[in-house]
Length: 550
Figure (cartoon, rainbow, N blue to C red):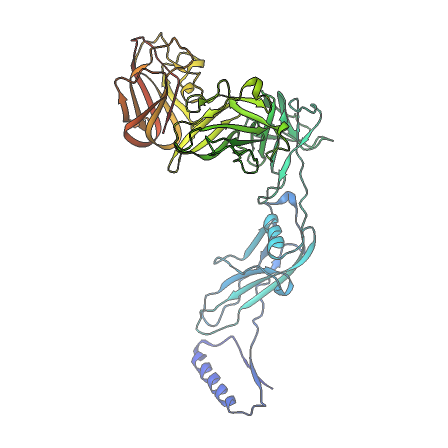
């Protein structure tokens, strides 16, 4: 076999001549005998980059995830005779690149590449399929390519090998201790470590369980002093205490019951709160259209650990074809799974009377299954039928909210706050009572002020379309009669920038029943201001039971 070599380093003035010689050579051999095989080879460029690794063996560590684990460095490639611009690529894989990552184009002027412990760990596990806790040899390669010059030249290549040892994830325990632990202050409750999201080893934890009134904090070990985690500036702040230091201040539990805890050590955040119930299901024609007592088919309320006391369910209140729109809720204290038997079941019912309209009274009580005869089977009714709704149960305040959805609008009244107000009498009679869902609480203005108009501003926490007002006068005192008369509702996205009137009435109906008041000017806004200019009896004070929008 005849072999011819074409060298990659060419004098600049000979490029055309080289091409002619090559063409002539190929034509000459095309006429040779078949048995005269030949091949053309291109000389390898000598490695002048000298790729280097910072260590012959890299031992990865779960405790150093963000730290650099391996660093590769190399020099500049040799000048190319084809006047092409040199581009550098980095590649990493098993020896011989039987498995490898996609080559990475380096930025101009960059002659180094690093991987953190976490990045190399995930590369080994996910792309090269190296078993966790084992070792492997890896090969790195830098390619200096000059493909866009006057003629082709072979890339310059530099390689290096090294060994790496990975790790298996070792659980990092965290224990709840303190007087709030019903198993005893000295005992520990182990939290569940969340390791399925990125590199959160030993960082994120969750737990749901029983606590009693008292305080709690967290320790890294139950057998020795290995540090602790305690309360910071607030009940949401988590601070670390090193071994040998004081344990710090505990988090507070005021009410015994079922609690949820969510911890993020790196963020210094803890979200803990009263959950109350393990699971809540809806039953009844008022929410589901029928009375089906099969738990596997009943709608289960959802909940978020960031607001553990709130359970929500999207539903559709049936139309007038369902004449008996009643409902009640069933719950369990612990598991969300379907209860094993009816002995585990509790009812969530209206607190006093059967057949109370959910729009008028949202108080909740708990009753064990089997107590209906002695304590009354007090269901709610849903009238009028408003179509799609979101039902929210507040387990801490034992209240239920039914929020109509207008299109995609979710009127999450339990998230509303009072931005500001004028005329509040005392802490128990503030404007907050008008949006708490309890018709038996009220906003009562101070009789000593005598300075109409009295007003308050509701913050929806997001923009909502205000189609109309749902209004309920004071309910807790049957002798109270000076209900608001001349009233006005206004909306705004910035209280400092001005207000738009959506409804003004010179004579709001003087009734105790719930009123549905369509707006004369429908707007979309974050804030709603309600103002009272006088009362029906002419007294220098006024009061309101409950208010919402639709």
